[in-house]
View 1: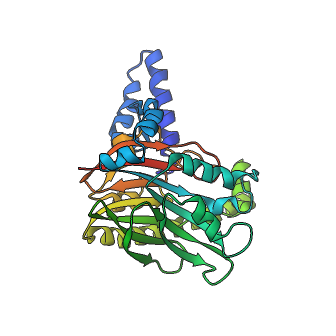
View 2: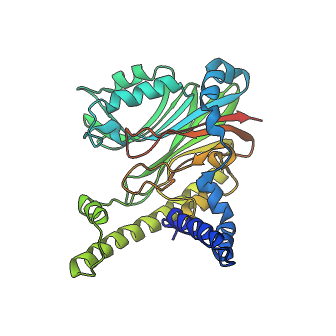
View 3: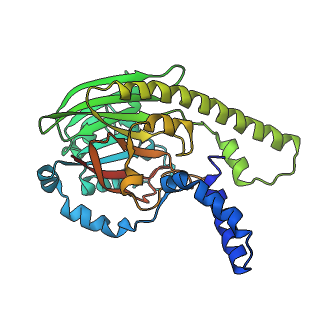
Length: 335
Protein backbone atom coordinates (compact mmCIF):
# COMPACT_ATOMS: atom_id res chain seq x y z
CA UNK A 1 0.00 0.00 0.00
CA UNK A 2 2.94 2.28 0.68
CA UNK A 3 4.26 1.77 -2.83
CA UNK A 4 0.78 2.45 -4.21
CA UNK A 5 0.23 5.63 -2.17
CA UNK A 6 0.97 8.18 -4.95
CA UNK A 7 -1.49 6.43 -7.25
CA UNK A 8 -4.14 6.12 -4.52
CA UNK A 9 -3.68 9.84 -3.86
CA UNK A 10 -4.34 10.64 -7.52
CA UNK A 11 -7.44 8.44 -7.56
CA UNK A 12 -8.83 10.07 -4.42
CA UNK A 13 -8.09 13.57 -5.71
CA UNK A 14 -9.82 12.74 -8.98
CA UNK A 15 -12.84 11.28 -7.21
CA UNK A 16 -13.09 14.34 -4.95
CA UNK A 17 -13.22 16.64 -7.98
CA UNK A 18 -15.66 14.32 -9.77
CA UNK A 19 -18.17 14.27 -6.89
CA UNK A 20 -17.80 18.03 -6.32
CA UNK A 21 -18.68 18.68 -9.97
CA UNK A 22 -21.78 16.54 -9.51
CA UNK A 23 -22.48 18.36 -6.19
CA UNK A 24 -22.64 15.06 -4.35
CA UNK A 25 -21.70 14.66 -0.70
CA UNK A 26 -19.81 11.46 -1.57
CA UNK A 27 -16.79 13.72 -2.21
CA UNK A 28 -16.27 13.60 1.56
CA UNK A 29 -15.18 9.96 1.37
CA UNK A 30 -12.16 10.68 -0.81
CA UNK A 31 -11.51 14.08 0.76
CA UNK A 32 -11.39 12.64 4.28
CA UNK A 33 -9.11 9.87 3.03
CA UNK A 34 -6.65 12.48 1.76
CA UNK A 35 -6.79 14.48 5.00
CA UNK A 36 -6.34 11.33 7.10
CA UNK A 37 -3.05 10.73 5.30
CA UNK A 38 -1.85 14.33 5.59
CA UNK A 39 1.47 13.42 7.24
CA UNK A 40 2.18 11.01 4.41
CA UNK A 41 1.08 13.56 1.82
CA UNK A 42 3.48 16.23 3.10
CA UNK A 43 6.37 13.77 3.02
CA UNK A 44 5.72 13.19 -0.69
CA UNK A 45 4.52 16.61 -1.89
CA UNK A 46 5.33 20.11 -0.59
CA UNK A 47 3.23 23.01 -1.87
CA UNK A 48 5.36 25.92 -0.68
CA UNK A 49 6.61 27.00 -4.15
CA UNK A 50 10.19 27.34 -2.95
CA UNK A 51 11.34 26.04 -6.32
CA UNK A 52 11.27 29.71 -7.37
CA UNK A 53 14.23 30.26 -5.03
CA UNK A 54 16.52 27.56 -6.45
CA UNK A 55 18.67 29.93 -8.49
CA UNK A 56 18.62 32.55 -5.73
CA UNK A 57 19.98 30.09 -3.19
CA UNK A 58 22.68 28.84 -5.55
CA UNK A 59 23.86 32.39 -6.21
CA UNK A 60 23.46 33.79 -2.70
CA UNK A 61 24.72 30.84 -0.67
CA UNK A 62 28.08 30.32 -2.32
CA UNK A 63 30.87 28.70 -0.30
CA UNK A 64 31.98 31.95 1.32
CA UNK A 65 28.44 32.96 2.32
CA UNK A 66 27.80 29.49 3.73
CA UNK A 67 30.86 29.75 5.95
CA UNK A 68 29.75 33.14 7.24
CA UNK A 69 26.29 31.78 8.05
CA UNK A 70 27.43 28.42 9.49
CA UNK A 71 25.60 26.65 6.70
CA UNK A 72 26.43 23.38 4.93
CA UNK A 73 25.38 22.44 1.43
CA UNK A 74 24.91 18.67 1.31
CA UNK A 75 24.40 16.47 -1.73
CA UNK A 76 23.26 12.84 -1.72
CA UNK A 77 23.37 10.99 -5.00
CA UNK A 78 23.13 7.35 -6.06
CA UNK A 79 25.26 7.59 -9.20
CA UNK A 80 24.78 4.00 -10.41
CA UNK A 81 28.52 3.50 -10.90
CA UNK A 82 28.70 6.73 -12.91
CA UNK A 83 26.84 5.06 -15.77
CA UNK A 84 29.58 2.46 -16.17
CA UNK A 85 27.47 0.17 -18.36
CA UNK A 86 25.77 3.00 -20.26
CA UNK A 87 22.36 2.34 -18.70
CA UNK A 88 21.19 5.80 -19.80
CA UNK A 89 22.37 5.32 -23.41
CA UNK A 90 24.36 8.52 -22.97
CA UNK A 91 28.11 8.04 -23.22
CA UNK A 92 28.60 11.54 -21.77
CA UNK A 93 26.59 10.85 -18.61
CA UNK A 94 29.64 10.46 -16.36
CA UNK A 95 31.11 13.79 -17.48
CA UNK A 96 27.70 15.42 -17.06
CA UNK A 97 27.47 14.14 -13.48
CA UNK A 98 30.75 15.77 -12.57
CA UNK A 99 29.93 19.01 -14.36
CA UNK A 100 26.74 19.16 -12.30
CA UNK A 101 28.60 18.51 -9.02
CA UNK A 102 31.32 21.06 -9.78
CA UNK A 103 28.69 23.68 -10.65
CA UNK A 104 26.69 23.02 -7.46
CA UNK A 105 29.89 23.08 -5.34
CA UNK A 106 28.55 21.20 -2.27
CA UNK A 107 30.42 21.00 1.03
CA UNK A 108 29.49 17.37 1.66
CA UNK A 109 28.88 14.72 -1.02
CA UNK A 110 27.36 11.33 -0.17
CA UNK A 111 27.71 8.89 -3.06
CA UNK A 112 25.97 5.53 -3.27
CA UNK A 113 26.91 2.93 -5.91
CA UNK A 114 30.29 4.66 -6.11
CA UNK A 115 32.81 3.30 -8.64
CA UNK A 116 36.47 3.87 -9.47
CA UNK A 117 39.43 2.10 -11.09
CA UNK A 118 43.02 1.91 -9.94
CA UNK A 119 44.16 2.13 -13.56
CA UNK A 120 42.31 2.63 -16.84
CA UNK A 121 39.95 5.29 -18.17
CA UNK A 122 38.44 6.34 -14.83
CA UNK A 123 40.98 6.19 -12.04
CA UNK A 124 40.63 7.28 -8.44
CA UNK A 125 43.16 10.06 -8.99
CA UNK A 126 41.08 11.40 -11.92
CA UNK A 127 37.99 11.48 -9.72
CA UNK A 128 39.82 13.12 -6.81
CA UNK A 129 41.05 15.86 -9.12
CA UNK A 130 37.51 16.54 -10.33
CA UNK A 131 36.33 16.76 -6.70
CA UNK A 132 39.25 18.83 -5.43
CA UNK A 133 36.89 21.26 -3.64
CA UNK A 134 36.00 18.38 -1.33
CA UNK A 135 39.50 16.96 -0.72
CA UNK A 136 38.71 14.89 2.39
CA UNK A 137 37.12 11.53 1.77
CA UNK A 138 35.88 8.36 3.43
CA UNK A 139 35.41 5.46 1.02
CA UNK A 140 34.38 1.89 1.71
CA UNK A 141 34.42 -0.67 -1.10
CA UNK A 142 31.97 -3.56 -0.86
CA UNK A 143 33.02 -5.22 -4.13
CA UNK A 144 36.52 -5.52 -5.64
CA UNK A 145 38.47 -3.86 -2.84
CA UNK A 146 41.73 -5.47 -3.99
CA UNK A 147 40.94 -5.36 -7.71
CA UNK A 148 41.14 -2.74 -10.40
CA UNK A 149 37.40 -2.01 -10.56
CA UNK A 150 35.87 -1.15 -7.20
CA UNK A 151 32.29 -0.50 -6.07
CA UNK A 152 31.04 0.88 -2.81
CA UNK A 153 29.98 3.99 -0.94
CA UNK A 154 31.82 7.27 -0.43
CA UNK A 155 31.58 10.54 1.49
CA UNK A 156 33.57 13.56 0.31
CA UNK A 157 34.00 16.64 2.51
CA UNK A 158 35.33 20.17 2.22
CA UNK A 159 36.12 19.98 5.94
CA UNK A 160 38.67 17.77 7.71
CA UNK A 161 37.60 14.25 8.60
CA UNK A 162 38.57 13.41 12.18
CA UNK A 163 36.93 10.00 12.53
CA UNK A 164 35.00 7.37 10.62
CA UNK A 165 33.41 3.97 10.88
CA UNK A 166 31.46 1.30 9.04
CA UNK A 167 28.15 -0.35 9.87
CA UNK A 168 27.96 -3.71 8.11
CA UNK A 169 24.81 -5.75 7.59
CA UNK A 170 24.58 -9.53 7.33
CA UNK A 171 24.25 -11.31 3.97
CA UNK A 172 24.32 -8.22 1.76
CA UNK A 173 26.68 -5.83 0.00
CA UNK A 174 24.58 -2.89 1.18
CA UNK A 175 26.23 -0.84 3.89
CA UNK A 176 26.32 2.35 5.96
CA UNK A 177 29.39 4.45 6.72
CA UNK A 178 29.65 7.33 9.17
CA UNK A 179 32.13 10.17 8.92
CA UNK A 180 32.99 12.72 11.62
CA UNK A 181 33.94 16.13 10.25
CA UNK A 182 35.39 19.20 11.93
CA UNK A 183 33.06 22.03 10.90
CA UNK A 184 34.41 25.31 12.25
CA UNK A 185 35.47 23.69 15.53
CA UNK A 186 32.28 21.63 15.87
CA UNK A 187 32.20 17.89 15.25
CA UNK A 188 29.36 16.58 13.11
CA UNK A 189 28.63 12.96 12.17
CA UNK A 190 27.52 12.20 8.61
CA UNK A 191 25.77 8.87 8.01
CA UNK A 192 25.87 7.74 4.38
CA UNK A 193 23.49 4.85 3.68
CA UNK A 194 22.70 2.41 0.92
CA UNK A 195 20.07 0.08 2.32
CA UNK A 196 18.80 -3.18 0.89
CA UNK A 197 17.80 -3.13 -2.77
CA UNK A 198 14.95 -5.21 -4.21
CA UNK A 199 17.19 -6.60 -6.97
CA UNK A 200 14.57 -6.92 -9.66
CA UNK A 201 16.06 -8.51 -12.78
CA UNK A 202 15.48 -7.72 -16.45
CA UNK A 203 12.73 -10.31 -16.69
CA UNK A 204 10.88 -8.71 -13.75
CA UNK A 205 11.08 -5.27 -15.35
CA UNK A 206 9.94 -6.63 -18.71
CA UNK A 207 6.95 -8.22 -17.00
CA UNK A 208 6.04 -4.96 -15.22
CA UNK A 209 6.33 -2.99 -18.48
CA UNK A 210 4.01 -5.36 -20.35
CA UNK A 211 1.70 -6.28 -17.48
CA UNK A 212 -1.70 -7.48 -18.63
CA UNK A 213 -3.33 -9.62 -15.97
CA UNK A 214 -4.57 -12.75 -17.69
CA UNK A 215 -3.91 -14.97 -14.66
CA UNK A 216 -1.80 -17.40 -16.64
CA UNK A 217 0.61 -19.70 -14.80
CA UNK A 218 3.58 -17.75 -16.16
CA UNK A 219 2.20 -14.41 -14.96
CA UNK A 220 1.38 -15.81 -11.53
CA UNK A 221 4.95 -17.11 -11.26
CA UNK A 222 6.30 -13.66 -12.15
CA UNK A 223 4.06 -12.03 -9.54
CA UNK A 224 5.23 -14.53 -6.92
CA UNK A 225 8.87 -13.94 -7.84
CA UNK A 226 8.50 -10.16 -7.49
CA UNK A 227 6.54 -10.60 -4.24
CA UNK A 228 9.28 -12.76 -2.72
CA UNK A 229 11.92 -10.22 -3.73
CA UNK A 230 9.90 -7.40 -2.16
CA UNK A 231 9.33 -9.40 1.03
CA UNK A 232 13.02 -10.29 1.36
CA UNK A 233 14.07 -6.67 0.83
CA UNK A 234 11.49 -5.34 3.33
CA UNK A 235 12.68 -7.74 6.04
CA UNK A 236 16.36 -6.94 5.48
CA UNK A 237 15.73 -3.17 5.39
CA UNK A 238 13.76 -3.36 8.63
CA UNK A 239 16.71 -5.08 10.32
CA UNK A 240 19.13 -2.56 8.85
CA UNK A 241 16.94 0.35 9.97
CA UNK A 242 16.90 -0.95 13.54
CA UNK A 243 20.69 -1.27 13.61
CA UNK A 244 21.15 2.16 12.04
CA UNK A 245 18.69 3.88 14.39
CA UNK A 246 20.65 2.55 17.38
CA UNK A 247 23.86 4.04 15.99
CA UNK A 248 22.15 7.38 15.33
CA UNK A 249 20.70 7.49 18.85
CA UNK A 250 24.10 6.72 20.41
CA UNK A 251 26.04 9.29 18.37
CA UNK A 252 27.95 11.71 20.62
CA UNK A 253 27.59 14.38 17.92
CA UNK A 254 24.80 16.02 15.98
CA UNK A 255 23.99 13.94 12.93
CA UNK A 256 23.13 14.29 9.26
CA UNK A 257 21.70 11.11 7.73
CA UNK A 258 21.89 10.84 3.94
CA UNK A 259 21.43 8.25 1.28
CA UNK A 260 19.39 5.75 -0.63
CA UNK A 261 16.98 4.03 1.78
CA UNK A 262 15.29 2.10 -1.05
CA UNK A 263 11.99 2.67 0.75
CA UNK A 264 9.20 5.24 0.78
CA UNK A 265 8.08 7.68 3.53
CA UNK A 266 5.21 5.30 4.34
CA UNK A 267 7.65 2.53 5.27
CA UNK A 268 8.83 1.17 8.61
CA UNK A 269 12.41 1.78 7.42
CA UNK A 270 11.88 5.52 6.98
CA UNK A 271 9.93 5.98 10.20
CA UNK A 272 12.45 4.02 12.27
CA UNK A 273 15.47 5.93 10.96
CA UNK A 274 13.71 9.30 11.11
CA UNK A 275 12.74 8.93 14.78
CA UNK A 276 14.03 12.04 16.56
CA UNK A 277 15.24 13.63 13.33
CA UNK A 278 13.88 16.16 10.86
CA UNK A 279 13.32 15.49 7.15
CA UNK A 280 14.88 18.31 5.12
CA UNK A 281 12.37 17.87 2.27
CA UNK A 282 9.37 18.19 4.60
CA UNK A 283 11.07 21.21 6.20
CA UNK A 284 12.24 23.09 3.13
CA UNK A 285 11.41 21.19 -0.06
CA UNK A 286 8.96 21.98 -2.81
CA UNK A 287 6.91 20.13 -5.40
CA UNK A 288 6.83 16.35 -5.83
CA UNK A 289 9.71 14.75 -3.96
CA UNK A 290 10.19 11.58 -6.01
CA UNK A 291 13.87 10.70 -6.28
CA UNK A 292 13.75 7.45 -8.25
CA UNK A 293 13.83 7.97 -11.99
CA UNK A 294 13.43 4.35 -13.05
CA UNK A 295 10.40 2.51 -14.40
CA UNK A 296 8.27 3.31 -11.36
CA UNK A 297 9.00 7.04 -11.01
CA UNK A 298 6.62 7.94 -8.20
CA UNK A 299 8.93 6.87 -5.38
CA UNK A 300 10.78 9.07 -2.93
CA UNK A 301 13.57 6.83 -1.59
CA UNK A 302 16.57 9.18 -1.17
CA UNK A 303 16.72 11.39 1.91
CA UNK A 304 18.65 13.96 3.91
CA UNK A 305 17.60 13.84 7.58
CA UNK A 306 19.17 15.85 10.39
CA UNK A 307 19.27 16.51 14.13
CA UNK A 308 16.89 19.17 15.53
CA UNK A 309 19.85 21.53 16.08
CA UNK A 310 19.97 22.17 12.32
CA UNK A 311 17.53 24.19 10.24
CA UNK A 312 16.96 23.24 6.61
CA UNK A 313 16.89 26.47 4.61
CA UNK A 314 16.26 25.00 1.19
CA UNK A 315 16.00 21.47 -0.22
CA UNK A 316 15.93 20.64 -3.90
CA UNK A 317 15.57 17.43 -5.89
CA UNK A 318 16.99 17.92 -9.40
CA UNK A 319 15.45 16.03 -12.32
CA UNK A 320 18.80 15.03 -13.78
CA UNK A 321 18.40 11.76 -15.67
CA UNK A 322 21.99 10.58 -15.54
CA UNK A 323 21.32 7.72 -13.14
CA UNK A 324 18.24 5.82 -11.97
CA UNK A 325 18.15 8.24 -9.02
CA UNK A 326 17.87 12.01 -8.95
CA UNK A 327 20.40 14.03 -6.92
CA UNK A 328 19.08 15.74 -3.79
CA UNK A 329 20.74 18.61 -1.98
CA UNK A 330 19.92 20.74 1.02
CA UNK A 331 21.30 23.76 2.86
CA UNK A 332 21.57 23.11 6.60
CA UNK A 333 22.31 25.89 9.07
CA UNK A 334 23.58 25.11 12.55
CA UNK A 335 21.46 26.93 15.10
